[in-house]
Image 1 (cartoon, one colour):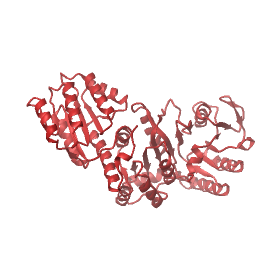
Image 2 (cartoon, one colour):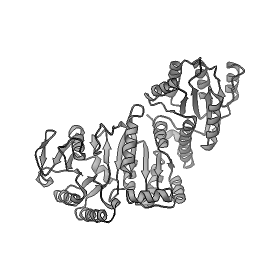
Image 3 (cartoon, helix red, strand yellow):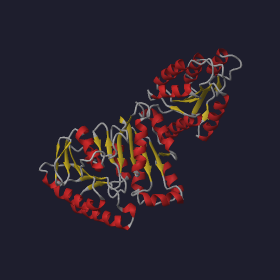
Image 4 (cartoon, helix red, strand yellow):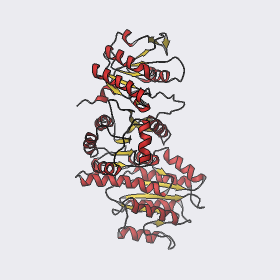
Length: 473
């Protein structure tokens, strides 16, 4: 079945209505994006006419003789209905309206949005927006994000698709992903704003069917089609992991949402149950979404909830052990053969039961032996690799190489956390260059494994083998 958003992302011709000759103006940025990246035909419209980026500026979309499959309207709100009607007369059926100043600002804006809705109905137009960033796909050269690259860095092509009600949240998270590791993360980005037409359910339907999407991240403030959304999520989550922030959790948040995208609040306890039942892993904070990208974007799913912890600092091991319980995980009990090997290999003052503490005397070789030994234990489903990087005998370069080699095996998930000063920062940067999941605290490392385990449990509960789900490259 063809979804509404397919018609946007598959368009072979695109028109920017409100293309501007003023550098860094929204209409200038979007025009630049399409002229320089979009493989199809780009048309630019500005009532003054002229030329921009070597392309003719048409005074009206009605002057263009060729067929246009999709358009972006970037004009002040009061002119938007007029431009939308011109697009309708031209036969353009798929339109992104990035401009704000509609239902989110009150009665005056509601009138304008109502005018838009009538025109959309009259001409059978699909609309993303208004009050949004629109759509982005690096592989398709599709980019209606009107913030210049000097302010908003774009991630490269990857397997993560994101849809969001909040444009500002989406922009900031997109920028953050561009700086995370290799920056190769995003397949599709959808910012739908006021959701006058295309909403969270349409977005989920599209990325759920998209063969290039393996992980779905969402930011929601309310639901336009709650029942349909949950039914779709229940189906899609058995094939692809879905993680999301559902805002409006509190009365204070609900008031903020109402003034932001005209969102309505809902009973959060009910929402929480519905999300869980639909297989959506709910996250609360911004850093958890980034952790989802690192964990699900790079690691295999664990086949169970048994965790091994390797550390050179007892306190870090205790912190991680506390989080194991909080994240519905268990400390693994090593098999007799593995426990015997650890006991015979390490000196008596090392703690060889889980968590394995190789103390402040640890060397990189100690880490290699401990990590490889527990990795091979059939009683271990995932591993937390903790390093307090200030100990004297640890060759940090060798430690980095050992961690990289273990990460390449892709048989079990492993999460690393480095704690300390310059060497910890250095090692973190080196590992992230190769998209190896490394976190700034033991708790975040454990929590990342917990999210992977939660998804595996959900799959098994529904009769799906976690090995059948490919979430990492």
